[in-house]
Image (cartoon, rainbow, N blue to C red; front, side, top):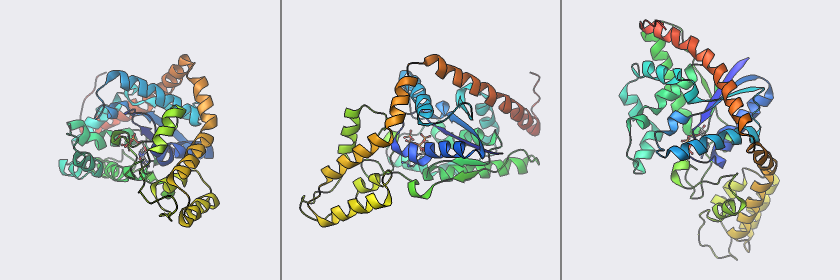
Length: 326
Ligand code: AQP
């Protein structure tokens, strides 16, 4: 059976971009029965941008709830915390020594964050090396991710090849990205990539009041109500995530005809979100009452992942000539 692996950073609350870009595919691959799925919470990665310990703890717990409420099943998939498998950081160090700094400096995500005025720490630069370790540790075949992560996947392949070549081993498998074209990059309320760190998210499990506020804040132009509007505006793009082709075309026609305002369309988007995530929202409320169950899921998942990681790190250390006695 092929192995699928991916993670999400607990750097904030899960949003539509995380869901349609990544999470939905975790669940679809799990339910296809064709993959052995490993899905983790990238808590070490989130330290590159998050410095509030309480927020990190809350976000971590929230993402596990999201995973479970949206349909990841611990009986079928391995769900764990990155930090429960310290071998990830150990492997990251070994890999960093075959990774040219120039490669990391060319990272789109790194460059985008700098362009946004974020002052980079070393972790932000070396983020793709830790990500390569996450993936290569488990002989991963496919990595379901959003399009923004495509380059990081290429880095993971480059790093694997470099390590295998340098040490003349066949230790790391080359992973393939699994990217769905129609939700490759989900736009945020401002039309740019929806991102926790850009403050432009729509969080499907936010309170209904907050969700409404987020949807109503989708940026539109000032075309008067009665005039025709661009049918590919930000509101229509987000509606497309939920609606059938027929419904999408209906909305486009209404925009072209005029007398259909952005406010009307936003209300349709809000209703679509509430309907789409209605059941998951209820399940999530139930799951939130059972902290023991959440901890048990993480404990079991961590144990299973760690056993695999311990074997792999021994082989990696042996390849580079590190003698481990313990
Ligand atoms: N807007 C998006 N469209 C499609 N996919 C997206 N993903 C994130 N945003 C979009 C996918 O979600 C997965 C988990 O992402 P992450 O949280 O690990 O990192 P990220 O891509 O950096 O997500 P954010 O929200 O932009 O986080 P911050 O702001 O903390 O950097 C990935 O598979 C990603 O492709």
